[in-house]
Length: 253
Image 1 (cartoon, rainbow, N blue to C red):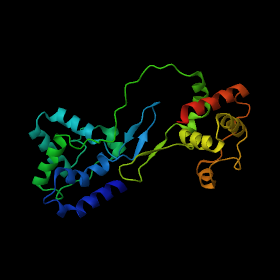
Image 2: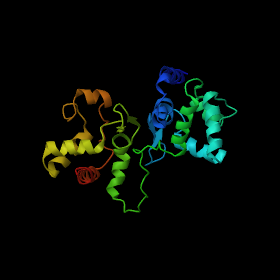
Image 3: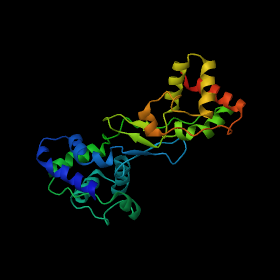
Image 4: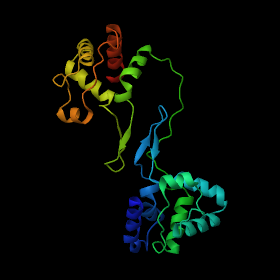
């Protein structure tokens, strides 16, 4: 596996740097790239964004291992044995997870006994926790605006449903959508049109008959996302007006 080879290569190349390393430094070099670096998001469940990693998330692994071993001493013994000689039979995960993630590369000879002690302390004390992953707030029961149904059916699939995450900048996780994000579009149109009435007029004309010449986005964006499909005949004139008003009132903030 390419990822496994790269991870192992990085670990071996930095082995001599660990003489005075802290648990965090050892973790960041050997564990974080696969077990704590977000590479995408799972949006299979409506409204829920679950981070995706190259290997089981470190928090889940540690919780599972603590439960299985019972003591810090047993926890350390398992870690030392497993990272030096990973084996399907020793794994706490089943065949499905191993098939999905693969077996981790061995770190035998990369970490000293002292390094493993530092790493175990770091893991056991759960100092690795990702601060930028927030737990979702409890759902509140709210009255749904009937106009929102028009938005959910005709706009949300492309302009407000995340399909990925951009992690080009370290520590920044930007959601990606099939089309420009709805709030960005609305603010751009509101600024261009100058009033609610002209905003509604623009929306009604554009969604019925999309045209590159009418678009507020340049060729680069159109090349990336394509031109939206016309919605002429999909909604009545009254529904389009309601939708335009909903967009202005909800996202032009």
